[in-house]
Image 1 (spheres, rainbow, N blue to C red):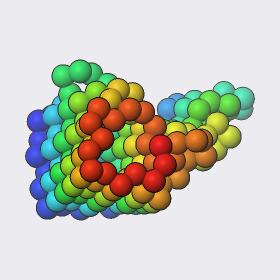
Image 2 (cartoon, helix red, strand yellow):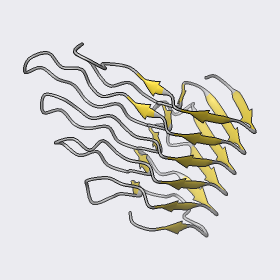
Image 3 (cartoon, rainbow, N blue to C red):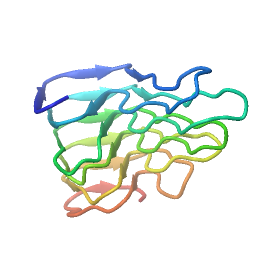
Length: 178
C-alpha cells in the first residue's frame, strides 16, 4: 500500500502465503496489511490474520512470516499510523528447517516510523515453532511511538510476549509484559 488512509474498516482472515506448503521460502509479510508506503489506519479492526509458515523441502527451510496483522517494511521513508484500532487474534508464521519463527503477531515494524494511538493490541501470537518468535503484540526493529493504548494478553514463547523493542515515547499505556 502506498500513501493510503483506511477508515472505519475491518480486515478479517487474511493470510500471507509466501513459502506455505512444501515450497522452500519465507512465510510472507503482513497477513492483514503489508505497508510499502505511508499508511494511516483509523477506527478499524484487523483480526484473525496470519503471516504464512515457511515452506520446506527435506532439510532446507526458511523463516516464518512476520507481522500477522500489519507489517511495515524497513525503509526510513515509510511510515504507519494506527489510530483507534483493534488488532486481535493475528499470528506470525512458523519457521522450518531450524530457521526462526515469525515475529510480531499483531504488528512487525521495520520502518522506525510507527505511531500507535488510542488502540488495543490483544490476543496476538508470535510464531510458536522450535525457534520461537518475539513480540506477540508488537515487534520493533527501531523505536516506535505508542500512546494511550492497551497492549495486553499477547503470546510469544520468548521473554517478550507483548512488545519486543523500544518505545520512543511510552505515554499513558497499559502494557502487560515487554
